[in-house]
Image 1: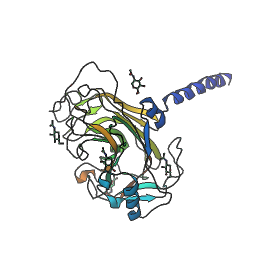
Image 2 (image 1 turned 45 degrees about the vertical axis):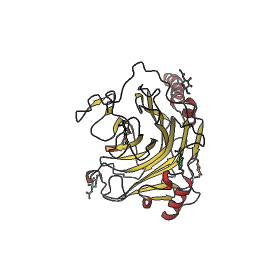
Image 3 (image 1 turned 135 degrees about the vertical axis):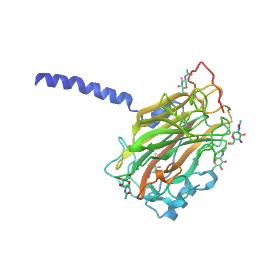
Image 4 (image 1 turned 135 degrees about the horizontal axis):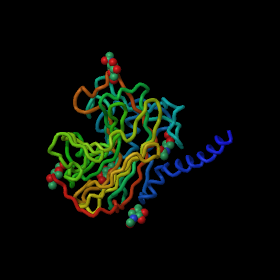
Amino acid sequence: MARIILLSSLLIPIFLQANAASSTPASAIAAQYSLTASTAIPFPTATMSNSDTQSFITSNWNLLRNKIENGASFVDFVADPFPNAPAPGSQNASGPVLQVTYPVGSFSAGNQGGTQMVSMFNSSSAQPFEAMLVTYEIAFDQGYQWVKGGKLPGLRGGPELDGCSGGNQANGTNCFSTRLMWRTSGQGEVYAYVPRTDDICPNSKRSLTESDGVICDDKDGISIDRGSFAFSPGQWQRISLVVRLNNPPNVANGQITLYNNDQQALTKNDVQIRTSDAVYTAGLYISTFFGGGDDSWAPNSTMHTYFRNFQVFAGTAPSNLTRSTARRASR
Ligand SMILES: *[C@@H]1O[C@H](CO)[C@@H](O)[C@H](O)[C@H]1NC(C)=O
Ligand SMILES: *[C@@H]1O[C@H](CO)[C@@H](O)[C@H](O)[C@H]1NC(C)=O
Ligand SMILES: *[C@@H]1O[C@H](CO)[C@@H](O)[C@H](O)[C@H]1NC(C)=O
Ligand SMILES: *[C@@H]1O[C@H](CO)[C@@H](O)[C@H](O)[C@H]1NC(C)=O
Ligand SMILES: *[C@@H]1O[C@H](CO)[C@@H](O)[C@H](O)[C@H]1NC(C)=O
C-alpha cells in the first residue's frame, strides 16, 4: 500500500507537467508566431432556416466575391447536437453551430453536397499576411460513414483565389491551399496544394511514393502525415492549423503545423509553398465534401458535420526557420 501511494504521488505531478507542456491553445500559438491580427467568424445567437443562414453568412463572413461558392443549400445554423461532449477546455460551447449536410450518394466539390466558400482575412493595410492560423471546433454525426475520405476546412492563399484545388496545381506563383481531410476510419491529415517540388515529391513521376509521411499519389493534392491524428464521431474536437510561408521564396522553409485538441499532431518545416513573394495567405477556406471525384467516395445515407468557433489569426512575418539548401520548384 505504501508503495502504491508513493508511486502515484510521484506519477501524478509528472503527468500534470507533461500535459501542461504539450497543451497549446490557439492564442499561444498565435503569440509564438507574432500573428497579431485576429478575427472570430461571427455566429448567430439563435438557430436559423437555410435561407437566413445563407444571408447571415453572406453578410458577416467577408466572403470572396460575397458568395457561398458551392452548396449554399447545405448549410444551416442548428442547435448543438452534442452539448454533453464539448472539445477539451472549450471556452465557448453554447449557441447554434453550423451544420453541413452531405446527402446520400454525394461526392466531389459542387452542388451535390457539402459546401465551399472563402472567408477572406485581409487588413486595410496594403501589406499582405504571410502567416496564418485557423482554429475551429468540429463534430461528426454519430455513426459517421468515413468511406474513403473527404475534405475539411483549412487555409488558402492568393493571388489566384480559385486555383490550387480540384486538380488545379500550385506553381509557386499562383496560390496554395492547405485543407484537412478525413480518410478511412477517421484518420486525419493535412491535404495541401503546394508546388510538387523534387523536394516534397521526390519521385513525382511515379504513381505512388511515400517519404517523411508525405504521399504524392496522383495529380491532386499532397497528403501530409495521414493518421497522425484521428476524428471521432459524436463529439467535438478542436483543430488549429498554422501556415507560415517560406522565405525567401527560393528556400524550402515553409511551415505547416497542426494541433488536435491543443496538442501538436504534425509539423512540416521544409515546404516550398511559393516561389514568388506574390503569394500570400488569404484566409479561411471552408471546403468540405465527400471525395474524391467518383461515387466510390460517397456515403450511402445522408451525413452531417458541425462547426463552431472559427477564428483566424494572421501576421506579416513569414517563416524564419533556417534551411541551408535552396530548393527549386520542379514544375
Ligand atoms: C522567428 O520568428 C518568431 C516569431 O516572429 C520570433 O519569436 C523568433 O525570435 C524568430 N527567430 C529568429 C531566429 O529570428
Ligand atoms: C479583401 O476582402 C474583400 C472581400 O470582402 C475583397 O473584396 C477584397 O478584394 C480583398 N482584398 C484583397 C487585397 O484581397
Ligand atoms: C453503407 O455503408 C456502410 C459503410 O460505410 C456499410 O457498412 C453498409 O453496409 C452500407 N449499407 C448499404 C445499405 O449499402
Ligand atoms: C501558374 O499558374 C497560373 C494559373 O494558375 C498561370 O496563369 C501562370 O502562368 C503559371 N505560372 C507559371 C510560371 O507556370
Ligand atoms: C463565441 O460564440 C458566440 C456565440 O455563438 C460567437 O458570436 C462568438 O464569435 C464566439 N467566439 C469565438 C471566439 O468564436
